[in-house]
Image 1 (cartoon, rainbow, N blue to C red):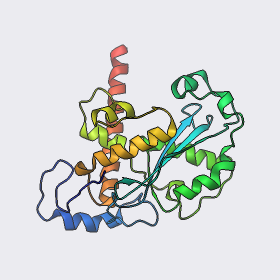
Image 2: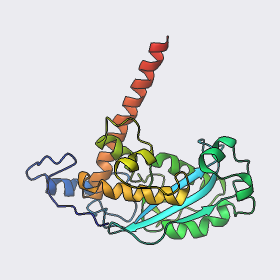
Image 3: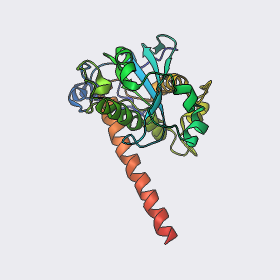
Image 4: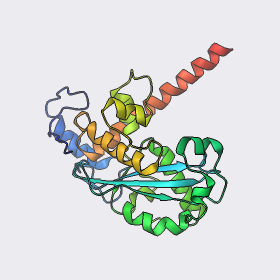
Length: 255
């Protein structure tokens, strides 16, 4: 699948703004949060992307651990090779809830390497690539927690290990493009875009589906990497605020 993006002032709604493309390109250079080694004027669709997905023992990166790593590599709107997956021995029991979701139990990871043992191999796939994840703050928090826990080095040419780097997040864009949808779970959004997931909640399948979903939304997203991240941060902040307001309204309704 190859996406086609035209350089114009049309984003992300398709409305045309005369002369804005050049101003966007220049402003994109100064956006904070870009992956080290990539210019804001980069056409992100053509750039090397690494889509990352973790299955974990729970949702708290300070207490829980990664049990499966999935990576899918894209470049030029094309899947470069078959997505890869690694089972990880977390060193702690896997909760029944996690096993119910992922299908991964203690017996499956008992003889698997731990995160530190896998780290050199994983870094090879992360090097010099823009990181992508669905709900990226979850995956990034676990990646940084594991590297910190094992005192592993953060190499300069591995953007995913830089805590300042904002990963491309298809969830933010799915929420923006489909605001009236009943939910934005990866499987549900993929279904609405006609993208199949062979095994949901297994890391390599989720990683591939996330990459394909991002590319399916390309025509509605800015071309320049810097502008993509600038707008993503804005939309994410607005979405977080709206979620807090809904939660607050719900709590007040219960009192």
